[in-house]
Image 1 (cartoon, one colour):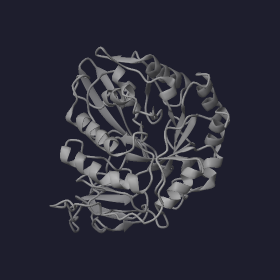
Image 2 (tube, rainbow, N blue to C red; image 1 turned 90 degrees about the horizontal axis):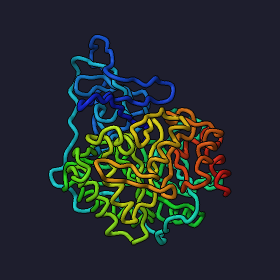
Image 3 (spheres, rainbow, N blue to C red; image 1 turned 180 degrees about the vertical axis):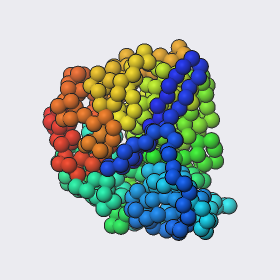
Image 4 (cartoon, rainbow, N blue to C red; image 1 turned 120 degrees about the horizontal axis):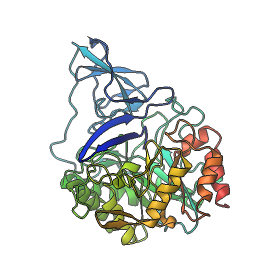
Length: 440
């Protein structure tokens, strides 16, 4: 979800052409399609290497290309955050020649048998059940968006910060854990100096103050190799102790890469089966009231009304499984950074109230793909919107948020936003608007 990457498709008959669009940070234009590069320059910048901390603007070379860091971050060993793989962290400046070759990322030959992160001692509290009333879901950033210049008005804040609750955020999705290439999950202090994960006691305090706390899995820079059952099992084995130790109330699935459909909605692909393997593995080891939410981009859900296959509609069998068996708390699909779709394949730009209404109605009424109907009633829908201009494409002003919400006469479970930190950086107008609409 951080620096969202969105894929659009032009469908003609059985053929499908994909063009990747990368959402650039504030102050940079988004780019689409192949970039025009200047002639290769000398690779005079130092080679990228794991374990180093890179400040925003720092230049490195990697695989005979020059890159500039978009944000200050640490390239954790084994995380796979090399410049070529993480466009949310690095800007590709083009080819270069000469210089010292980059050290390839390390791959552990034998995965550790226990999670490498040792949680702090002290603090335990019960898992909270699904909130009974309306919700405002805000993503909490485990980095400092002020110091790196993304949203200067407010950066990282503790998860116990009273302003989150004062401005309506009663569900917090903590974004994001590090996921190593072998599936090992790390929940550790963030990419920027001074950023700390909450202690178990602080998590309990936030819950006592009214928050429900979920760990968000994925995002733009923390994918999972869904082609491997071994990676899926390693993920489960290492994330469950973290969820228990840190008193999380649920998980939010925000996988943005590697999930594709088989072309037949009744036949799971390997990646779909392994994502279900992960979800089932986590739920089996947590209390029965432990929560599950999902935050897919539109192409992965209602995009299936255009064509089912590849990424298009690939979340649908997974959503259906957990909606039908009652484990899905709600769907907080991202109504931004891409088109919105109705049940007939009709398409609307992000930021259009008409598209918000059409897409939401489609899911409530039921989206039928190849004879299979997937239905998400209004009380299990928590549509996602950008908190402020710059947080994502398709920003809706407070008046348009009100218009969208009132189109369903208060029937929606709530709204989600990327992100609570973005909202706080510009006066909390999104949270205040939604809190008032929900009568809280």
